[in-house]
Image (cartoon, rainbow, N blue to C red; front, side, top):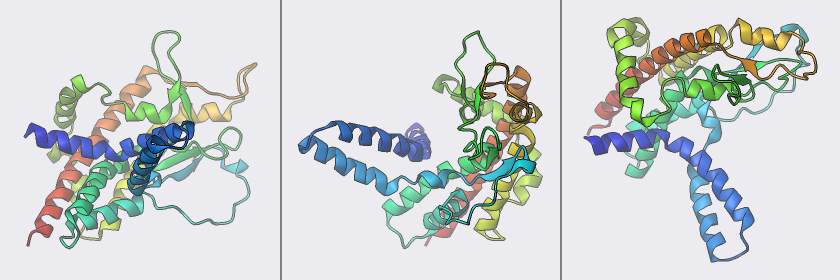
Length: 282
């Protein structure tokens, strides 16, 4: 049982590991002369690129803090495939018994990962400021914050804060999972879960999850203090408002929201795997 759990946990983070491996291998290859070692790393990089799909992890809708200062609309461009399309496709492949075991295993890894991503608010929204973030903050990745802590605490990305709200230490992982379930038992989320089956189509189901995440980002992640920092003039001697200070109240409220989103993701993931297993039976 522990071995199976370990495999599932690593399959769930495999898409993120691919992103890191892609960058690391490319850097190593660039530094090597032509030869056998470089050729082997190039072969490995080709394997990584075969499965690495960085745009699949998110589908960010814009939130504008100063809509009166919006730039002229750019000509429409082709949208890359995001989680809104990638997750339904992965769910279909997981259920498809005509596909190879390898392909369905890859689909399972993406389902495990993308169900989580679709419930993280900063995988569904990006904040725009005409003055400071005209290209958007890329889901909080360009929004630099200063978490509360000792003087000299290193500023970090808002996205990283939300990624690490629940647990960034493997030693506390089990305890955190128990707290999430205790605070959000399945029966307390009955209304949300009732509307989360795929009877109306798998795209509609995923859109519902992403819409929930977007609303959470709009109402809670980018709260009034964070938005105000982008509208107010910078402090004397500064050229930008970053890093924006976070207080403990923000982190406490964010942790409650993150636990609820994680619980919903877990219950919905279990339902998705259960449906896929029953439909894939001969």
